[in-house]
Amino acid sequence: MAVLTQERLKELLHYDPETGVFRWLVDIRNGEHRARILVKAGDIAGYRGGGRNSRTEYVSIRIERRLYGAHRLAWLYVKGEWPPLIDHRDLDGTNNRFLNLRLSDKSSNAANTSPPRNNTSGVKGVYFDRNRNRWVAEIWHQNKKYRMGRHRSLEGAAARELFGEFARAA
Image (cartoon, rainbow, N blue to C red; front, side):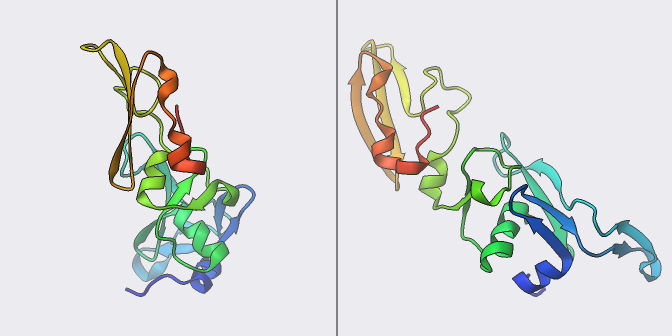
């Protein structure tokens, strides 16, 4: 199966960078002799579904029997290249407005996440050590653990120094 190109993508779909919505430019047919129309030109493309992270939903679009993330297609549509990894600035995997998308690496993408479900402090990378009666701040960045010490208050976590624009404390 050939790799989807920007040219082929633009033959099949129209992408609006302001809304993040893809629309079909052609009818998609199926069945015997391709008589049955599955999707009409002008219809919104894709569906919402769970991503690899079950807490996040993404928009997926099936093109020529292959499933693609709409955020990756948006990057291909605008930039003409396949992105290695895309981050949604606002954490909404269904918001595919181009200004909400940015190139990322695994570490930066992980920095732009909500705190885990079992987080009791409300701040990512901070937990309460009952034995020492202190808040402990530690963060993983670029496969290295940074320990920022024990603190009497939650104010000890300084994630922005490590993660820059990708930092998300809560």
